[in-house]
Length: 321
Image (spheres, rainbow, N blue to C red):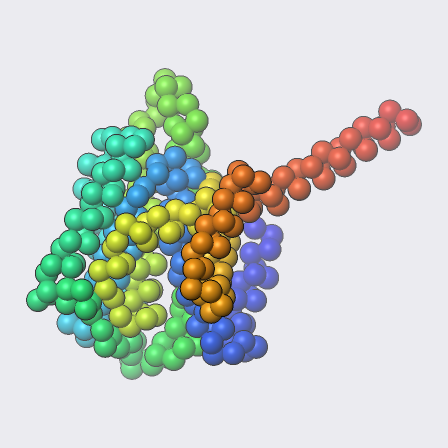
């Protein structure tokens, strides 16, 4: 966390020294990084593998789109309403999904995601069907503030929200409830013996994770100014799960790095090869074999090895003196 302030300052100053294309690319990276970080709360800390994390992402995008088009609400209000809607929806869905665990839980999340996809795809009169909803407008904010309509203004909004959510997520996983969730993950029987209620803790992790995904989806709608049923498809759930594993689950920052690598890699490889997913798949296989803890795990291993080596030298010096 000691690098958090310099990193935030660098992010906020990016539009001053990057081209318009790179500001747009960085906005896309931040949104997908938020999406991956939200999934890590489930996967990395609660060990709840979800195959339907695209559901809250897509629902957040659609609700924000409706608020912008139908309600003609300012962009900040549309994002807030989308987040609240996903939060309220994730409570009953989470209550049902957390009745199961393991593969059954993953299948339930997949079922709900495919149900949402079917509704968005078939309900043409409301969702636009396969064509989606286009022509979204970043309505001016309170008192006619139009700063968010520009590329740079929207980037600053996204960077601020992603940084704030990352800070809140870090506080949550380090809180007593976060420690309790990890305790249930490591040894559920012992956690029950000392008074924890695993299902309630898993439900809390599910709701918080889904709410973060809803925020990412709302930002996606305001970013592309277009939403479609593809945002709810199971392939997106698999894509973000790969980003979490690639970066290193259970670290928050690792999945964000994995997400950035996948976005940048997709842009760069797609420009030179039509079969770029094959190269991404090979990279993923290589990382899983060489670094089972993900890319961030490599950094952690190096730091731990250096600390151990330093401690050994201190012991040798003490013995020599």
